[in-house]
Image (cartoon, rainbow, N blue to C red):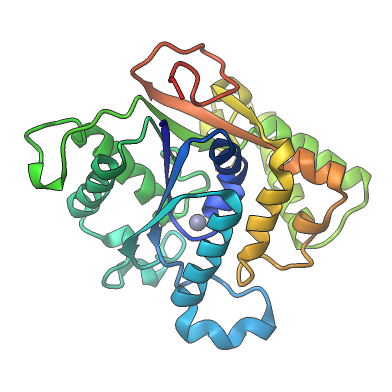
Length: 300
Ligand SMILES: [Zn+2]
């Protein structure tokens, strides 16, 4: 049986970036594994009524993660055991046990052990910007790349399990053109609120940078969204939208139940969350340059 293993930074990242791929893969009989690097201890609690859980937020978020995993058909969830770090430059980054300041080789070795345990065919994590620059997301990227270098080396820590070679490595990506299209829809429909404002601000930033004279800002310096030409795999997970939104909803402390991102009209939800994009970073099998399936070239 084929196996998908994704490495994410915090509980909820798996549902937002990859809920569709997880649900779809589970339905295809693929063994799905999630590695979550931190407990999400520093997450903002979006619902004031839930503020009382703050002292045991890691425990509560672990429960939310299990609930989301169940909805998405994730068979195994592994916590890598680190503490959440703050945004870039935040003092929390230096806290003992924080993922961003963790011993890099030790963290990569922990992940290598999990790769050898589950023998995934496809591995996915964020790109080198961590998707949007959060230190924990960048660290998740770094340890995954390092673990991919170590996992098949028989000389590396044989006590962590037998060497294994995953066939493909992907980075999750947010399509810039979809983000722009989405921002236009938000505008057209006159949607307001936090989420809509954030989308509009992102679109504005992308537009502004695009208008700069050539050479002032490489497209890759833009912190959010990936130019479409860099995307190699686009997954149509629109039919899994109910499960993806359900999984996001399970993260109650992180995503407001009444948030527009969860309650928009069904047709819009399908278009917003139903497409998931990836960049193929490594492949040891033949597969087309542009894919609609991250398992292309791999027998299931
Ligand atoms: Zn995160």
